[in-house]
Length: 262
Image (cartoon, rainbow, N blue to C red; front, top):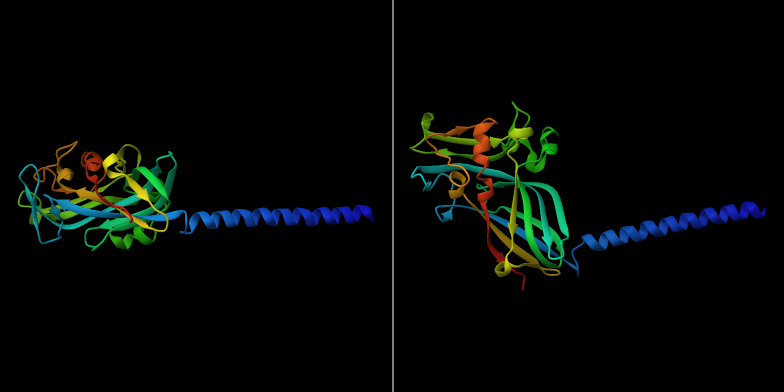
């Protein structure tokens, strides 16, 4: 009788202890992820520019450093795997994938963060190999967004379409669909932006801080590689031409403004 009682008591005690631990873990998780006293929001806004002015689709003419004039009809690119590091070296990471589209009035990514100061932002321009090998997906990665190659499983990382008098293609077209994720053909590029002393980024509890990132197309044509429209009006396959264009990806982005929460 005593042995049975002890076993029953021990079983009940273990069940209670396990339940208590689970409740503590769940409570801790909830407190750390719901905006409240220790959390704020980082709003990342992407703006597209060329020749020092906002990109306007089908309605403005721009010129590159080679004097080639061009008009933009489509401009889309993927931003994924965003991470931001605070002053203590702790990194917050998001695996979400976002499609930036110049046809939209606003292109915003929101990330919940603990209050504090942050030193650097990293993200991937493009889509990582895991997603590329997962077939057609939903949301930002839905093939209906026109950023998926049905003939060659994989995503277009960066798309620019337009027209130029310098183009040697029919109808003076520019069609750059920059993709490739396998081995040496991978064009997905890690971008790192540091916040210097003059532009400290601080997240305040219960408030939103806005970070404006400028995507400057002037640097698309000239940076680590010279991309002339006359020589490369069309780029719609993986390999050497796409890799050449991708060399300039690291020069595309810069911190334009930081709007600190009051």
